Image (cartoon, rainbow, N blue to C red; front, side, top):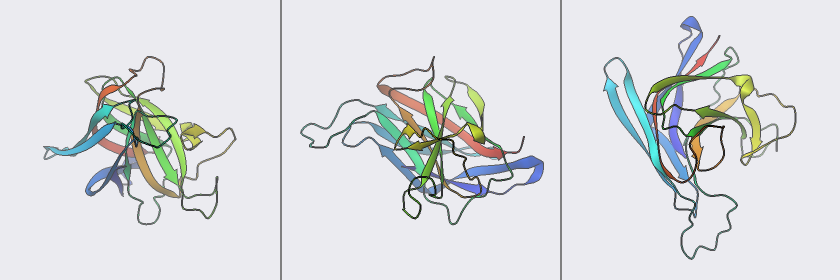
Length: 203
């Protein structure tokens, strides 16, 4: 699932910058569904550096003749490869992203070392928050870390749990055809999200 997000340490002004690594990206879509996704990396300019465009099509249809059973379809996402070791964001309290959206609601996921669901297992813990990216305009979305909710296979865990921001092993962005926040565009069809940068802030 995705384009890798690598932490580039910049401790001045309480900012850590997360930058794209073009050699380490994974895309994922609902399978055996017919959703599709791509990630294009472009040079914005000498000062802005690289920008990404995450785009594709969300479909609720399944591949004809598939024997797979699916509860939900219409999903696409991009996820970093596991970081080499951990990213420690204990000194920060907010994730900020400069995005150019299409009116859809996107999902920001932070993966941490597994200690909530099945300690010792390979599946990481996931913490998710919604992002509503306004259509056709660059917008800085800020998500406090304490707004990320613990989830298990897309469902919120109904328990009081706290993320350990010092043990982050990966990040992702995804989009669903259904669900999200009120006022967001929903349903099958095309999606497109421009990504200028992702940072961790100390506010």
